[in-house]
Image 1: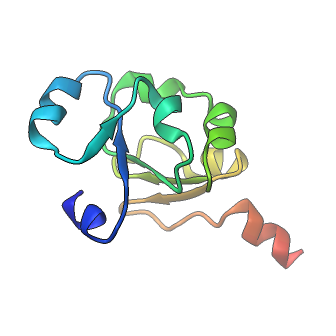
Image 2: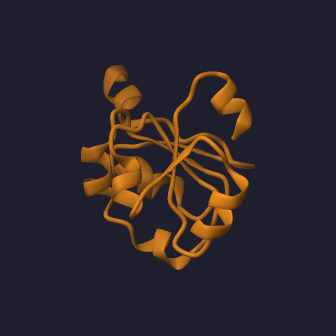
Image 3: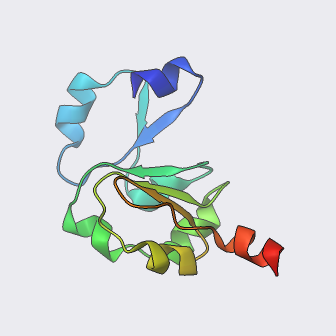
Length: 108
């Protein structure tokens, strides 16, 4: 996270179980009340935990709040094609990157 901040990123965070611990460890981070508040104006969402709360997100609601619909899934919680179908660019670890809907549309 420090590398992102050093590069100029503004980091917002939400964790349904670990907010108190995060506040003690991470400086210069804005803490959100919920995932949707966290997504407000975001260029990307980065999923770093596997809590069940993240498995039942309303992706239409997330997407409408974001500046750019990019989801980086560091835990491989989601199926790439499911997230892509919801209009997100999806990046995960150890799997090929799913092409975004926008790139597919530009090839048609």
